[in-house]
Image 1 (cartoon, rainbow, N blue to C red):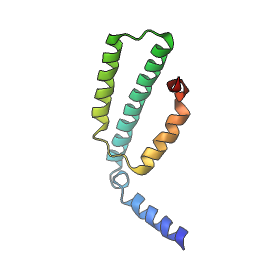
Image 2: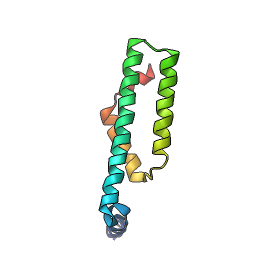
Image 3: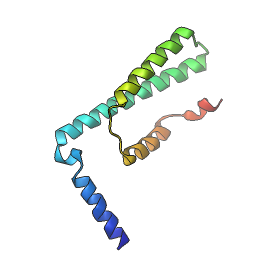
Length: 103
């Protein structure tokens, strides 16, 4: 009975989501999220390579800070649900090697 309840509850939530009722809007939102995620990934890889090469300058740090601020302001308008946050954690662990941050 509990499984039936959860399945009905999730079905109702899925059918009433904006992505289902307005698919074009949903696709646009997904594309925006993907573009922003790609931007964060590019910035991450750039930072990792600069740190590995020991070529960190004050100018580079200020440029990265500006980039992060810009990306953060773009992402502030996104509505990300709990499932999206959990999914992003799974994807981040797969795509990013975070062990170098612990050095």
